Length: 274
Ligand code: FES
Image (tube, rainbow, N blue to C red; front, side, top):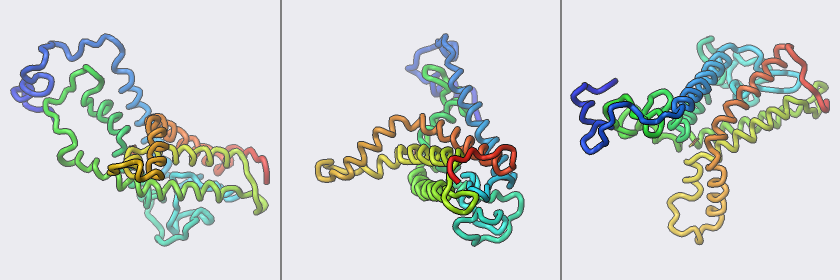
């Protein structure tokens, strides 16, 4: 909600001491392009993931044990036989509850509170500000000091849950080395699942909270050589966190889409063994 005109005229970029510039920005380049692409990319993912999470079809390939990450872990009696690797402690679920309901809220929370995604959606959706040297439309700025944005501080806890979920995805990827005859086998689906899980690890471990967990609050790195080594490795990955954030959105969609095509018999899995 915009601040009243009088308040707006004395706050933000209109504050006393700020340069008096009549236009919203002096930038003449296409500064609006990155925020626009971000809106399109994130919106496309949210629409796809929401539809796929609710449709309850073509998420499990029984022959090869492929399970899409959007339904993992599948823990209810509504899951198709074979897809529940950790049992079914929950009864049948109504259609308005996604079968991956146990972890989806945490994954959503993990991504929503991610330091990179915050930057992305603050700029692209909230326009606060939309780009460097472009005034935002809001008159007041309170940062992340009050509800609801103060909840962004919960990111570290979402990170710990995300570690567990990535472990589960890893288990799914290993469990999928299964041939149609019941023994070992692998095909293109396994390649996609493994690449997806490696990139999920890269995204999860490159998290800023992981960097703090490994090397934060130490007074002397020399006294903690193992943590220092872990921190340097995480720091390297952390410089590419934005890249992993986008790539994993793509690999999640690709993995789900491929499994959907195979599970619905639209295509056959390209098999190398078994
Ligand atoms: Fe992006 Fe933690 S997942 S900062």
